[in-house]
Length: 593
Image (tube, rainbow, N blue to C red):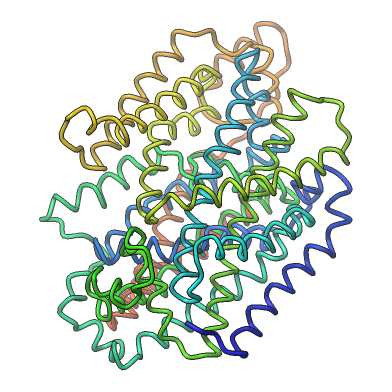
């Protein structure tokens, strides 16, 4: 596909804006490590919230949603919608705790919470494991989406796509630090939303689709429309609805949806002005992420079923593409080829924005681990801020290079999504309990991390090679969760607990709630150490998690029913979501005190 001048103006203008932002904030970002990685801990909730949404608005997400809808229908999205429960738990329970910890990275938490060499080893190992290996894997999935978009829309080879897409991102990420990322995220989110909504409107009204009514009545689309799965079809109900809602959300570690918060979500909370802004940022993120963004992608995915009913039809339309990457997720960029010039440039700019937003966040986040949790902690504790900022910029470049190389070996978005889920299976409960149960220690996390990793490797690469029958993905997940949980529980009870001094320091600094800390408090009082009384609203927090989840789901479903022109349920769900939103605003202010 050949872009015209009007399309190139949009694309070039976006690149220029991103570079200018990075250059303008470069001096301030380079003044200290705190500025480079946390923007001086002075960011407002709305900017942080938009940044979180922009980061998850990655180039691979529309492809992933399209893949899910084409194969499992709209209800297949419960595989990731269920993570809303995790998100709301972070909003009302964990965001305040993270902000109180005042760590530079979420991995620094380990030596705030645990004691001894095991805590130090855990911090360093997780820095390499998450900041390098896992982070590169995540960025590779985003790069894969860029490869498919570049191949379909611009006739670019994978290497050409990655070179063009990565250079500008690396430049402004390495220059501007987190502040540069946050500001460009704000611009990128606006462009990405305009592009996706506008594109969905134009695509659904293409002659090949015939308008919304015609698309919704198409015989191939009708079976894909249900928001809830068929409760009589257990083959899809169990893996796509029951397991995500009953087990997956609390038991699986997944980037952006970590139980208890973590990764770049924790980084944003740690960058907030105060606890109120930390809560507001994560609340806005969860509302926008689940209720605001999905439907334009879903509409385009449904339209693609009409235009490209099979993989063979996609391959026939784009014969220059390697057959290995022609999967259902390719249908999204394939549909964008029908857009008129002018709009095409805006949409391509929006996809570039989505790519750059996600990559820039992961580069800054991963670099913070390399600099703060590896270099300064273990190699050169006396390193100056200038030295650490320079190292952060170098590691940013190297992480991008390795992610681009790995992207060349992936085939489709949902493949990577499920690999990442399996690798984190069984560790989620640790991240929830470590704030509320004193007995969790460094060995708990080490055992859970190692067990989940090797179980994932076994199921993905060894099991069938030994001659065993394939195990469905959802059963792999359940087995991984069960085995990993048993292993880390045994490790917890068989190893020495964290020192009482460290536990007491952590309790006094973070002030967690719940009966899990009573032994620590009792021990301190027996030792005649003053422990101030702390009032907690844990029951109100849990109620807010429940109401918040209901509110966002109602808003999500209401949007769907308005699109389906099913007026009565759309009105009822809209009213419920508005009432719930009022409650959430009140609780935000109340729980921030």
